[in-house]
Image 1 (tube, helix red, strand yellow):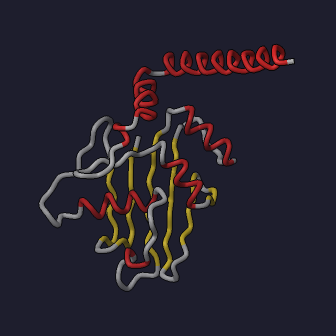
Image 2 (cartoon, rainbow, N blue to C red; image 1 turned 180 degrees about the horizontal axis):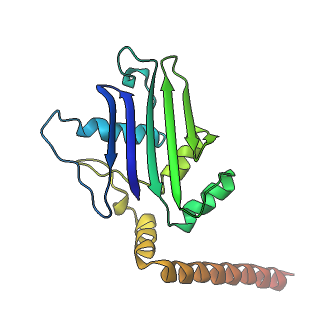
Length: 182
């Protein structure tokens, strides 16, 4: 869950921070109030395109820091695979900086990562939905994951058990077929 975002020197924003509450959070406001800038800054922090034009006029760099609380074992596994430390506090801190020379630096919990790694991780963190945009809910492959996540830890454990049993079944079937071909 996104808990906090800090935006510095992005477009018209000199510095702004948003603290999100538990559950559903909605950004509303008049046209031109800056909702899209916050969404764009979050997208940038999660591996979105880095264009020097987002750096506030007269500044050397733009920085966006997003703090998430993580409770998903899949995210923890991705972090482990990337060699990124994550403590028991379940906090995930993503910081991305774009310099005027076009160089971008991405950090996750203080560890420098590539944009590709950041995108892999962020695909499990945030799903943007807007008018006329692609929505991951429409894809069958995502529906089961979302449903399992909603079911909580017990359902996720049972799902993992079923996947393991099915893999064992397929491996055994292949072995049986090979034995009968000889």
